[in-house]
Length: 389
Length: 247
Image 1 (spheres, rainbow over the protein chains, first blue to last red):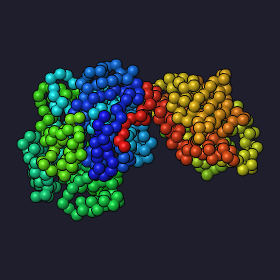
Image 2 (image 1 turned 90 degrees about the horizontal axis):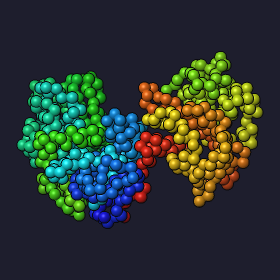
Image 3 (image 1 turned 90 degrees about the vertical axis):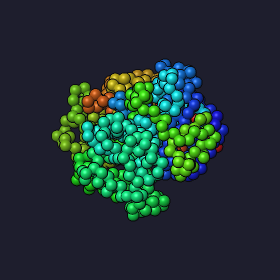
Image 4 (image 1 turned 180 degrees about the vertical axis):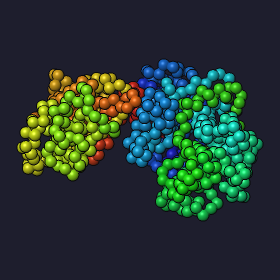
């Protein structure tokens, strides 16, 4: 089959590789009909995710048709059309039983690596380095899905791929980010980053009852989409100081909750962000937490900081004093996708949201390397790339 | 890990050793006297928290025998202290690892007690053949396509709590250990603790064994326990072996 393989920073290639096969009784094989490039794939593309190996197949937002199931998969059949959560979860450990699917105990075969770095291992992830299991990803014609009996959501007829594809990651991720804000009537939510997760976080914050949502970015077409498609009030942080602007727009109180939908490769305009770029370039710092610092300082006293943006390692100069003395609550983590699949599918079915609004590019799988380039450099007004194998 | 007072059936094996006045509180780590060592081993095996450091000087096998046969035997045995040390063979590797599994004690114990099951999750084991109630024959993979073999004997068994074993004379690798099953707080499953000791002999085989058991035996035992947990909770061991990759 054809698959997009990683060979180093800024080097991905579409190659012919072996077809996947069933390796465990709870596996299924999916013939992929739609797959997307995620902002977090860019962290890999940029070379900031450790434990990648040359030849690894990328991609964790994919869906398709079930073509084969293992002997223990009984609730999914050949021919079913299904979406695949990017987090791999067994369904029977302490964490899965408590709806914390991205913390599954049993899906990372390389748990020891994660334990060395993090103390404990989160769940395995598709196409996201050997630290998270080394599973082959879904930017390919076929993929093997472990624990398919809990990890596949059957899609009812009448919904196009593009309406349900983002249930695999970015829609639940944005939604969980908003849910983590514990939004109360009258709340103002500020969202740093208007990439796909940030845009879904804005929409979700309104769904969950926010009265106002403020969005911060610097890319004109993203700000425009936040404003026009998601009804956010926007701040271009290259024109004004985002922290000051947010404070002014919230009557000096600060937003009730702040979402960092940027993560480890933030850009910024301040001195701190220059230092971070230099340190990250020479690997003195793994992550550039410019957005997170701003979020902490901007958030109102007693407010909530919600972090869907991906962080991988060690962060410098986090204003812990501000966080502590303002009594902030922090909520974060990989998305518990399984928990959100059905409720969010219902919202799509009921027409509350059409998640396809942010797709700007539809490419063939063969053109995936080009997709990475334009997405990374935000060329051609690129916000979201969907690939068709 | 939770340190719990000994109680009920769980304490049976250790009770012989916990009667001496100094058994609680535990002695400070720097104490190396025989009695405190014995007490700490017994506390560990009986259910207390283990701090392996401070116990390096005394053999696990001796402690296990003591648990099975009573404190006097243990003290007798250790009175001949240092046979191995004096012969320059004191190259023992001790490993301790615990995992929590979301299943009841009995289910896990019964699976483990069928020793033939162990190669399903212990990567280096090739086979375990049960000879009789107490004795079994173990074959493990060694480098260069070779095997190491030994007979092991159960030296203590408390149903749904503890299995302790030691290799018998003539083993390629002298080893002893125990596995202990304890319910967690709040019905969150079972804590499974494995403590192992290998006495690695000198000579050619030592190098092979070092490789076999790896530079980090703790990680290998940890991985084995991870696989045990996956098998018991998820019904299969997570893997990516055999999946496609680019050239």
